[in-house]
Image (cartoon, rainbow, N blue to C red; front, side, top):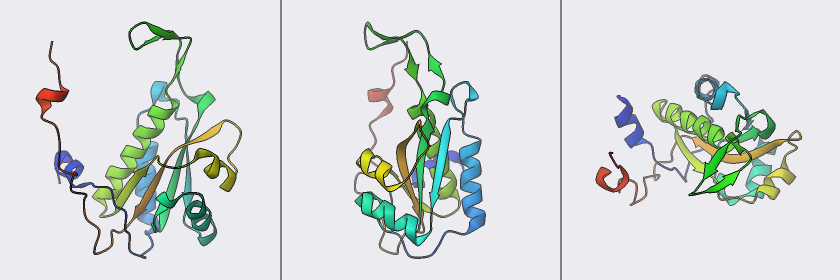
Length: 179
């Protein structure tokens, strides 16, 4: 499958069957995360792989967004390890002393994992709709490590399907400007 075909076939899965994800597939997904680009190659991501009944129970108690995925990866970033752009101008003249790319790095890592999982026949859901404090209360992360997103992973159920909006894409003329 070529890259665009792979990217188009990936969709947000919200219903998984009970089959566990095989260790070799988990290893491939995590390797895709490891090779993902990060700002100045700082690699600030921290991945918490949840598959025990205890860990899955805690994430499901903290957010409804874990659905019934047999594997959930909490994608975190060590904020202090991430690259900081020291002189950044944001949005038409608004400046800040530094811009931390930790969230972007973690999102790139998550995207790599999603595409790797899709290539392996698995479904995923990139989640940010949760209460961060509930996640922090459910799991003990080291100081400075913050959750950025959650990735649900598993085999889509027989009834899982892309949303009606999955293929709706604006034409390039609405999102691309050439100068």
